[in-house]
Image (cartoon, rainbow, N blue to C red; front, side, top):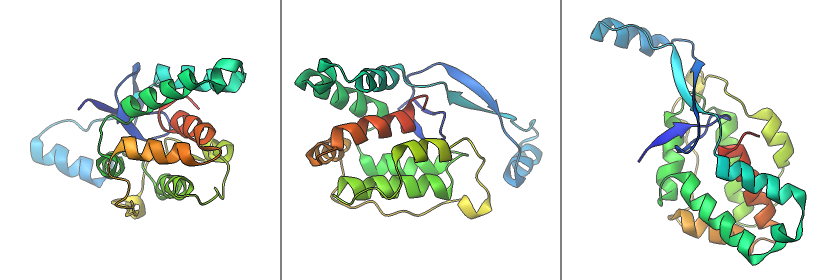
Length: 184
């Protein structure tokens, strides 16, 4: 599986232009450099964005007839399944802890998204989440964040299907994909 870190700090299937983003070395970087007699890595690879997700978001925002069609919904499913980079949703969730930018706020976003999929209204709008989440390096309190993924959500395809059952599920899925893997 070829994964990368996207602009908001989430990990997903590598589908975009790779950029190097400066990172501040932490204690573990110094220990590894001394132990392995190597220089400290000062960059993380971050993907600019997933073009398919960006195109989907732009199409949805245009509110044209296609964005309301069955074909568009099929496209949303296809793009979502590919963007996550794995068919195992639990694996994708646990993979997020590998991102040097996955903070407690990122975990809260995923938890709220899972609640939405289960039918609980969002407490924070996607627009607000898009402005709150960024490439802030995690600190010690952010390491190995635990968040609960319902065993009901084993496959990414099951998650996407459940998303679609919500009245505003398509809109929320497109917006969430844009936060996770797009340039929002």
